[in-house]
Image (cartoon, rainbow, N blue to C red; front, side, top):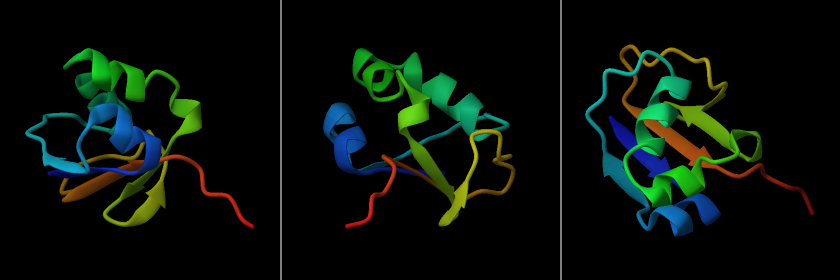
Length: 81
């Protein structure tokens, strides 16, 4: 699946996107897989309360199932102004 990173998440990981082979059942399972890859991922996903996720371009929760999903995007909360 395609995994996209935006704003400071992208800066910490050093990539805007990547293709990830995963057996993760949920978004949180995917986060756990990514955290153990390298320190940069651990830093990006250290506090998931500071993150939002979109699954196939729909704002979702971290318990969202990944079966059949093509894209997951991680980004900080959006602010108005």
